Image 1 (tube, rainbow, N blue to C red):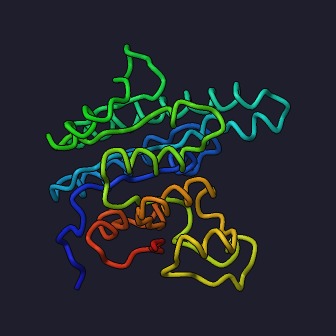
Image 2 (cartoon, rainbow, N blue to C red):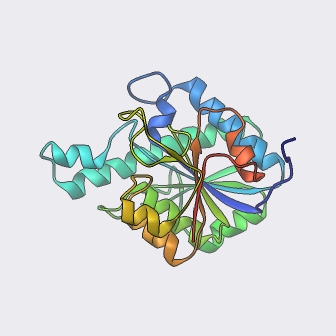
Length: 240
């Protein structure tokens, strides 16, 4: 029987921008963002304090822009703005699910989002508001994975959940290799040594420095977010 009692009081959920595309090749699919909001709302209903970082790859990816000849800093700035669009869409979807939500941006844009202020973010969480952290770290050359680990530490989240397209960590890319082996439990150091592309190496190193547990699982499997929060063995756990 699955446990329905939360294992954590405060969590951060990292969502990839590509996850919001659904079956489209670009942009935000309304059905998908509503599904994500419903999954997060179930966790919020348990009394868990939820913060979120969402990527921008469904709109613009800085690395891809720079590889096409664009200046990397400019491309990354565009990618950070793409995360703001996704954050505002997710905020709207969460509010429609009855979850009071605030968007805090690392790039100041007072007309659409609050500036990121650590103490204010923590206060929102204490008042049972979900908080979405937009615009990455506010600096180029840093991924939203790194931003997610940074924000998780700043608001004292007990764990970072990465909801992605695969059901956990494998020893090699399961989309390419049919004999890829699923890994249920792994250390930060082993991820770094084996160069498993779960998150970027900076994010893994930062999590390891502060002993922040990471859990990777598939977003499209209904109930996975609440299952992970309740400690039901969803996906792969990365820890010391």
